Amino acid sequence: MPIRVAVVGTGAISRGQHLPSLAALGDRVEVVAVCDVNADAARAAAAEFGIPAWYSDLDALLAAESPQLVTLATPPVAHRDAAIAALRAGAWVLSEKPPTLSLADYDAIAEHEGAHGPFASYVFQHRFGSAAVRLRELIADGSLGRPLVARCDTLWYRDPAYFAVPWRGKWATEGGGPTMGHGIHQVDMLLSLLGEWTDVSAVMSTLARETDTEDVSMASVRFASGAMCSITNSLLSPRETSAVRIDFERATVEVEHLYGYDNAHWTWTPAPGVLAEEAASWAPRENVASDSHAPQFAQVIAAMERGERPVASGDDGRRIMELAAGMYKSALEGRSVAREELVPGDPFYRSMAGSDPADATARIHAGTIRSARPEAARV
Picture 1 (tube, helix red, strand yellow):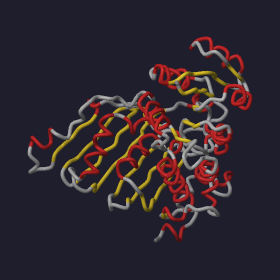
Picture 2 (spheres, helix red, strand yellow):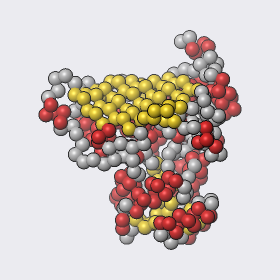
Picture 3 (spheres, helix red, strand yellow):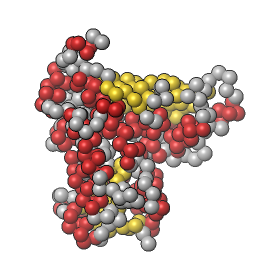
Picture 4 (cartoon, one colour):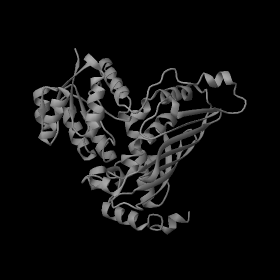
């Protein structure tokens, strides 16, 4: 029997990714309904994609259609409540990024998961391109040696009109700036490769856009392996690029693309002394691009069929939220932050802006993030 799926949100990401990716799964799934607070948009999407039912209220959809999987293609502020409602109804969840607005919200969703499902997972499609999959294999078996130095850049351009959408660039509805909403894809892929991080030191500012949040952030991150990485997230870069480079003991591996890669975007450079035959064996055996949600949707459906937790969920999905919170805490407090600090009771556990979003905005805009605590800046 096909898995019954409902899609919540019928905007561009839903029409461009969620619905086509589900269609690509063929008879493994049946999209039974779509939902949008805009009833006209829901009706139009149902007609366009041949979906039998549409709703403007998620609770009504869950009661009437009993979906087994709910995908969320809504603004970030809506993720927590929709995910909890779906899990309570017994449906698994696959949500767009960022997973939630805070670690507290992420954990609130997790509390409604079952020991054997339903589970909530999150869209991080860059993990699923064949080159990233192959690189994880090589890291795991030690072929490349230890990771030592890394760089992760998301340098994009968003003009002022982009922020005219009411929920964008606000702590309360988007959670943060490019650290949360844009660079999160690249950074999640980095974390899937390098594993657990231990501490972070970051700076942020709002240089050119009228937002409550940052429009650029930079960070230095240390990993449990000892590897060190620089991270830059920008919405002010006319020549847009997304790039990750990792220097291992035996190779440099790098990818540069924009919104999705295939194998041709990757470069594998062996260290001196590595035989050409061995370096040739590192190449991926297939060419799966990361510009589609389809590979991750297929992985979630396979996990449901097996009754197993999918990747990019639970602790695996939480790691990127911890690093984002650590970056905001470091930037706003003007000091290095250890991962172990981000626990309930810490203000950055509940909000990426800490305890006072208005003060966070004022300091980022004024460029006083580092000077706010001169004693920390001298350390």
